Image (tube, rainbow, N blue to C red; front, side):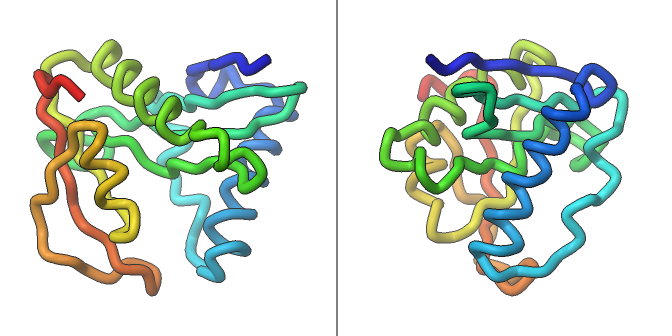
Length: 155
């Protein structure tokens, strides 16, 4: 059974914190072969929320929700979107994004969401109501697009 949780940094147990950082590093640094400053100071901000899915007491999916002005001046943001490799076949990523959008809009209603999406996931994010608003750009050696989602989008 999968359970979903959305917590501020100070409510995370040390086990959960370790597990979510391990998942992020395993995917973003090791699997994608992309050394970058994973610990960027945004995790501990007072308004940041950590959305994660637990299965058998283990994090299998995660997203970081950021308040307006913590990342972008006029938008909230969803970042560090990640699903454990063994669980990707189960389409958990779509459930994760649906929950991330819902939680973000519940926390910060009527504020558009902006993300920096890896370009190979552009269609995935479009299926969740995001629109591409930039030309491709390189970040940490991976091509990205800026994408936004209007709070009234229906996807």
